[in-house]
Length: 115
Image (cartoon, rainbow, N blue to C red):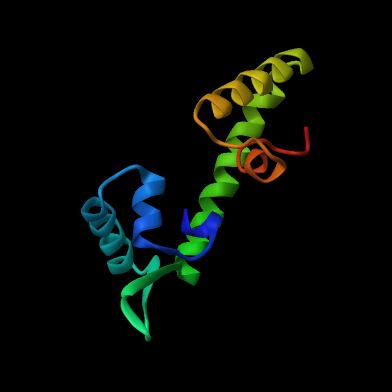
């Protein structure tokens, strides 16, 4: 979330993951200990904490994303154009039902543009 949405506070992470603030805090603590997430307090309001992804975290995110895109592309290449179109329609329906907007940025996370 932090990699794709930018710096977030803990409440936004909890809301995005649909978990309690304490669960989000534990998850973020683990990511910070692993060196993947950075936590900065607002100097004017210590209750406000901003979470950002570290360079190491971004590198891992990029590697996983490339791997995921490659795996999806291999599967899509085994489908004909009509099958890919039906899949795109189904994914659009799924995203809409989940309340997620379907736009080029979100679609690019899973759908290789080279096909």
